[in-house]
Image 1: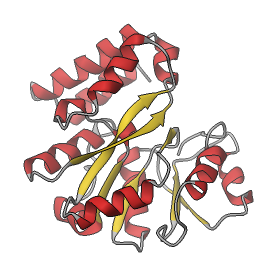
Image 2: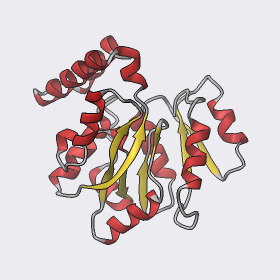
Image 3: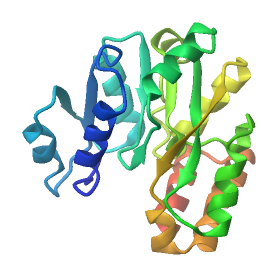
Length: 222
């Protein structure tokens, strides 16, 4: 998380209320230097939460969380995304079928027709329809076989990992919806933000470096 005072308490309560505590080995929150009171909210909750600290950057933060995790299945979740009821058992069911990595379908908390259509497309197991907002489950063994999240990428780290999973034919889309915030679209405008996301995708496809992608993101989105 990074400055998620608006969401973090709701998310942590959502996780514990929508999963079996016997399946949840632990919940790890990795903070990237919040200054809005997010850390205090986590520590004041009456829940067994491991709060870790890292330099800002999703890849760095998630790798630190993975390193600290004691379970055999990792589940990476953005602080503004709320997984479906019984998400833990749904993930376990897939791993038992030898599906070692995957995500949920996506639903934005917006009625905009384009975001609803984009959400609908996430039911298909196509790499172009994937993204970090859909969350990511992966066995720890496979995660470390790949090498974890590539910390060269300040943005797009989720898609780099997903690409490696598709190369290995190890990706499944669970037919249940995770609900995520459309706040970035609301901030920039749906079409403007979508254009920039497509531009980043095409730049990466054409061979742009991690630094180049980050520079574009900082200029147009951050």
